[in-house]
Amino acid sequence: MTEADVDGWNRSEDVAHNQSLDRAVLTDGGEDVSGGSTADRGGSNSDASPSDAVLPDDLPASKDKFLVWLTECWQCGERTPVVWPKGGHLDGPIGGVLAEHDTPVERVYSKTMGKRVWGNVCQHCDSYQGNFFVQQEAVKLNPPSAECPECGEAHDWRPDQGMGGAFDQGWITCPEYGGEIPVSDPRQ
Image 1 (cartoon, rainbow, N blue to C red):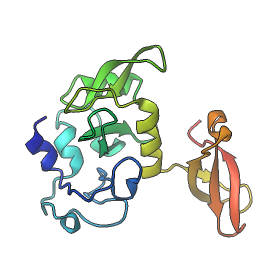
Image 2: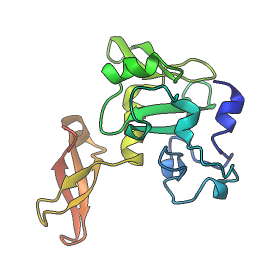
Image 3: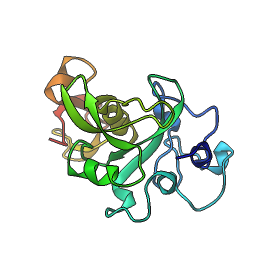
Image 4: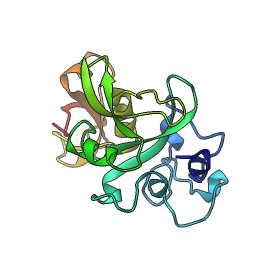
């Protein structure tokens, strides 16, 4: 992928990085999380979505099954594209499929896991971006829904930032209940 390909993503210098994903670019129709369009970010008004720049046309899976966004590389600080399956995990058969095509996904060694995994690599310095961190960004960009034990309706789920996160616990906000309710990870 060339620098021109990444620039074709309609990115701008003020788009937030890992610490603030409120303006990250998604595959869904060129919309960002804050609701602005690509034109609002000073980009092209073409109908191409960011996934078109990263996910090839011959990919044997629907592009709408993936999130694609730019993240800041932990190693070099450059912005680099990452891909994550919606509602799934990259380190499985889909990682192998993505790696067979021209995507940022490769077979890499994870020091945390102590084994080789499918993961996103920086397009500038080839550093593995860490599946845990990329998955956390994906949950922020596309939160799963969980059924509320109080009202029975579905609300956006977010992982617990403390010890509960280690045990697949998280929170939903229920307007009817008037507060936060702890619930298990609906993806499990």
